[in-house]
Length: 131
Image 1 (cartoon, rainbow, N blue to C red):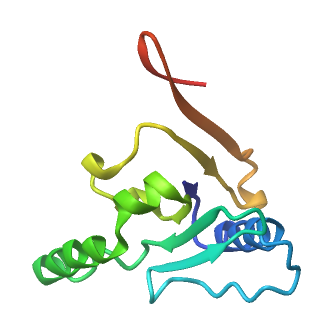
Image 2 (cartoon, one colour):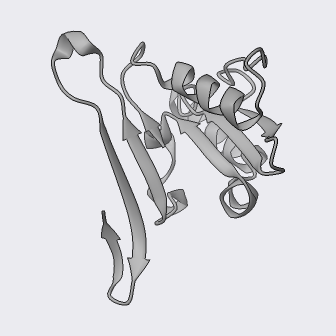
């Protein structure tokens, strides 16, 4: 999950990660702000799903209906099971759809003088725990 305010660098980080994974420094990586999801095949055969959920949930009750429809089209179960998912604005996901096993990167704008942070969640015999 890529978290941070507008302008913190979420899209830039996703673009760099996808170019590296695809071993193509000139790979066009447009923002999925309007398409919601763009898919890529890495050089080693892994699938990547780049999603931007910023526009989900806008517009009152009609927005909630549209968001539910958009979430269905994203095929999140498929993405979480078989692809590396780079998701901008993951806080727009309903809590029930957030995978327990994930890596979260929080990017901050340097002027705010807060460090960026990374958190991962993984399973052990006692259940899920933050690492």
